[in-house]
Each structure stands twice: as structure tokens, then as C-alpha cells.
Figure 1: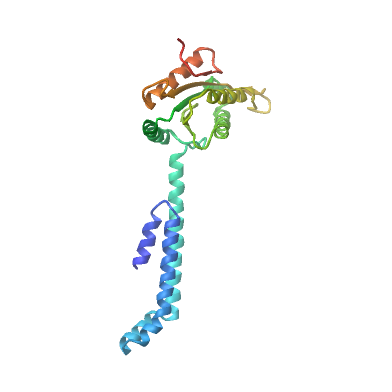
Figure 2 (figure 1 turned 180 degrees about the horizontal axis):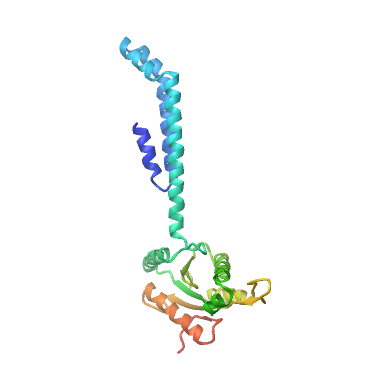
Length: 255
């Protein structure tokens, strides 16, 4: 019963390996005890020997083993469901990128890490130009398709260590760890150009559509005294990019 309860409780966690390991350990332990029972019974009194052999006869062991096996499977399935729910809660439902909540938490962690280590950090705010007009003209389903495509390009374009998130609506944000150089700006500009060259097809009768993005970049410690202020700098430069005609990357404020 103790082993059953442990496996069930571990199934409430979001890590399937925990109940699987506990269940296999409990099952092997039970089988091991069952194999030792005849030897123990041989050195026990008649009443105790009879009780032991009755409790650990073949039928009882098979029944208990199957019960423990089924409980383990159910606990693993429960843990997998919990893991899937947790994964969904951390991801934006449309694009699969990290959501705003995850971004805020990760930015706080990276801010503390940058402060301790002194490593530079950059933040890029990326906004789809005239997105409302795109939705109004071609429909929200087409707008969603564009957002998903851009999200895939963002994932492909940057390192796995960089944090890519959907910040809200048609706005994305990327946190570049240990990176604040001209090479980063060139990568962002290459991504902007790739998006601008791509043709989207809203329907069979409609002409192809091109979409552009505007990008604002802030770097710590060059542009701000803390990482949160760096985010505000990136957002300010995004609006400078839009005010300057859109479809551009702005990485420095006008002097």
C-alpha cells in the first residue's frame, strides 16, 4: 500500500520518469521479497510460515504485481498529462513561442545573471507593420498564418540559448544572451529583409501580399543601467523605426 501511494503521488508531478522509476523499483522489490519468502518461511514457526506462504502464493503475487503495474502506468499517464498542460501554459497557443509570462520570468533571471557576470545582453522588439490593415483586408485566419510563419523564422534565425517570445498581438521579442555587437544587428537586418522578400498568398483570387517588420534594439550595459530599462529602450527604438518609415532596424537613438 505504501508503494502504491508513493507511485500515485509521484504521478501528480509533471515528470513521468518519477512514477515510472518508483513503480519499477516497487515491482522489483516486491518480486525480490516474494522470492525470499520460502526461505524465510522455512525458518519460521508453523503459523507464521503458513501465513507467509498464503500471502505470497503465486496467485497473490501475480494479482499484486499486476495492480502495481497498472497503477504505475496510470501514474505515468497522469504525469504526462500534467507535463503537457504545463507546457501549454508556458507557450503561446498560436505561435508555439514562449508567452509573455515566461518572457517576464526569464528576463528577470537573465537580468540577475547579467548583473552577476557582467556579460552583455541585447533585446530586440519586433513588430509586424500595418498588421491591423492586413487583418481587416484578408481576415484573421490569414493574419494568424503570417504570425506563425514569422515565429518559425525567428526560431530558425537565432541560437537556442536566445529567448524568443510572443510579446503580444503582432509583437515579438528576442533576448540575446551574451551578445551586443554589430553581428547581431546584421542578423536582425537579414531576417527583416527575408520577411520583406517573402510573398504570402491570402487566397486563390487575391494577389500575393508582402509583409514587413520594424525592429528596435537595446543593449545592456551600453544603453541602460539595468535590463528592464533596456527593454524600454528597445521599445522606444521600435517606435523610432516605425516613425522613420517602417521596415527597418533601429539600434541606436538619434544624437
